[in-house]
Length: 46
Image (cartoon, rainbow, N blue to C red; front, side):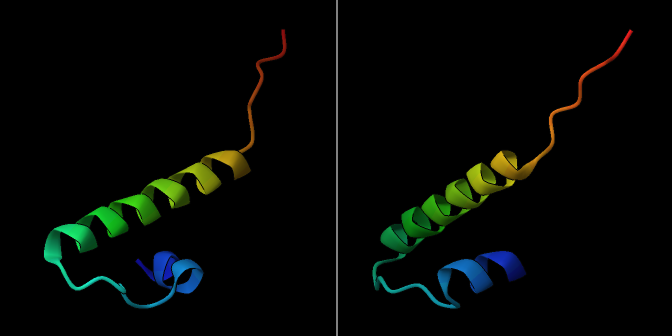
């Protein structure tokens, strides 16, 4: 949760609960994509 707050701001801008949930899910999806992009790919040698 710390990384989400640091990268995307510490609060949700929308008032409606369902829209807040959608906004939070979009932030988590973006964070997962950034994390996946930063992971090293391991290759087995031999």
